Image 1 (tube, rainbow, N blue to C red):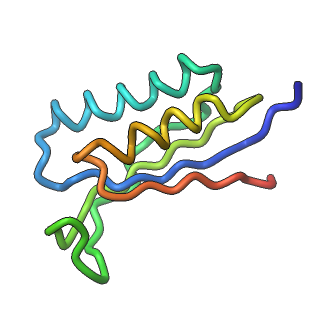
Image 2: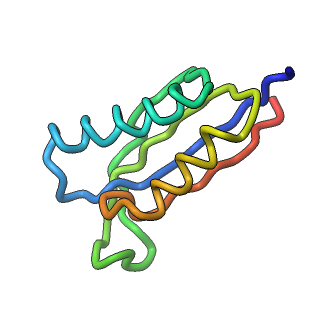
Length: 98
């Protein structure tokens, strides 16, 4: 099977303490790896101010994951769980061409 490179960017609530944020990131990284994805990089981008309010917040912590996957099983599970997690304000999954 051919691997495809993806990038996931998600925004974490700014009011989470460091331990909760670390646990959240590790949980979502594990969701991807448990479903066959190979993480290349998982890092905080920065805390940024929004152009408009999202979920009552004016800023959020951006986290970026770069990964390789042979199928979309891990991505679908990430997407499903990110939609119902209150600590993730927004997320976006992009297929990379490089």
